[in-house]
Each structure stands twice: as structure tokens, then as C-alpha cells.
Image (tube, rainbow, N blue to C red; front, side, top):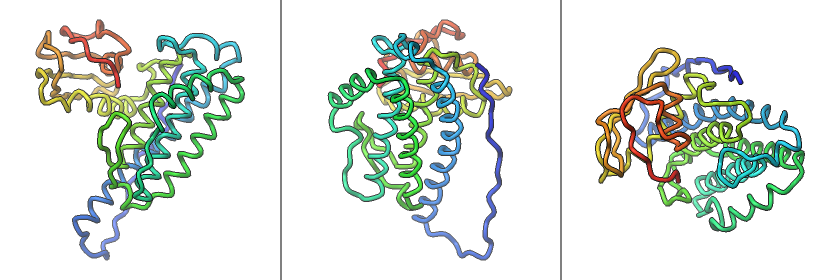
Length: 270
């Protein structure tokens, strides 16, 4: 399936009459701009997701996805619950009161399992409503609140501005997991670029890992390079290939057989 890039480049005007920003204000402005940029990309990703889900007939929801043990209904239900989980974290950022993404991992898994048993139209409407709740929560945060720190279910500390990026990542890679005609290679270069930056973060954070250079060639001719730290012994000093193939490996959706070099086996995706 072809996924068109509907994004546009916009220039923001700067009020020259405004006085100099304080350091804290610059940080909040930067966080707000980061969140807004990701939210725009997320809106485009969700438009594709909603179109794909709307076109799935009832029997297709019961068919297997690319995730072991999950049907397409499980994947769509997970996307809805993940949007709600990120709403909880945005509420935490806005109020300053701890509001975990999920009550527990067991509750999260039970909600997905139960939700996957519903009729297709109910699952669709649940997804659309969850995305609407995300948009509403997004617009409730002030500029400064995007710099607030919250805790991801993995235990990782995040600034709130990263939450729209996580939603974006979930949307695209689970679209591929749906096995409904969208592949990483169908994504516009700008979206691939964003997803690669998000996918390398858990790998890059390992201080005890073996060094590995990862090089991705984007469809628009640009090349991106990351210096990573892999938990297992690297088989090559460098792994390179098309951006879609690199992303498939980083997200554990492929073994990296289409890449140049010998990519190491990565630990399970969190």
C-alpha cells in the first residue's frame, strides 16, 4: 500500500519585539515545539491507520497479525489502550500527580485480550475514540508542562514531549504488524527518519554494550548514522542498508538478513 506524505514545511515567525527568553522558558518552548511537531506527524499516521482499520472486514479482525499469538483485533485494541495509557501520562505531566500508564501489566494484557473479542465495528469505534481522547489531552497541556517528567511502564523517565513520539512509533510499527498491506518501505522518508531516531534510543542507552555503527539510507537520498551500544557481542563494526530494512531489524520485525554486515541479535523489544 502506498502511504503518501501529507506533511508540509512551515516556518514559524519570531516576534522580534519580545524580550530575551529565560533558560527555563527556552526549555519549555523547545519541548512544546517538539511535541507539536510529533503531534502533526502522528495525526498523519493515525489517518492512515484509521483508513486501514476501516477497510478491514469483520473476518480479517480474527485473522493472525504478525505478532505471535495476536490477531488483528488484538493489535487494534492494543493501539487504543496504548493511546489511553499515554493520556494517563499526559495527565500526570499536566497535574503533577502520579498517574501511571496502566494499573499493572496484567491489567493491560487482560484489557487487550477481552477487547479483542468484540465486534469489529466496536473495536474500530474504540480506536477512534481513544485517538480523540489523546488529541484532547494533548491540547490541554501548557507549554511548560511539556517539560514535565513522567515514568514510562518500562521504568524509563521521559519528558512529556516524548509522548506524542511514542504514539507515532506505536502507530506505524503496529500498522506493519497488522499485515494489512502497509510495510516499512511504504512510509515517507520523513516518517522513517523519525521512527529510526525513536527505535535506536533503547539501544543507544546501554553503557555496557559493544559499539556498533548503524547506517540507514533514506528513500530521499539522505543517509543517517548512529553509534550504538549493543548488549551482545557485535558480529560487525558496521551494519548498513535501506532505512526500512534497518527499522525492521531495530524493531525486531526482521533478523536483519537484508542488511550489509552481520547484525547481532537484539534483545526482546520492550
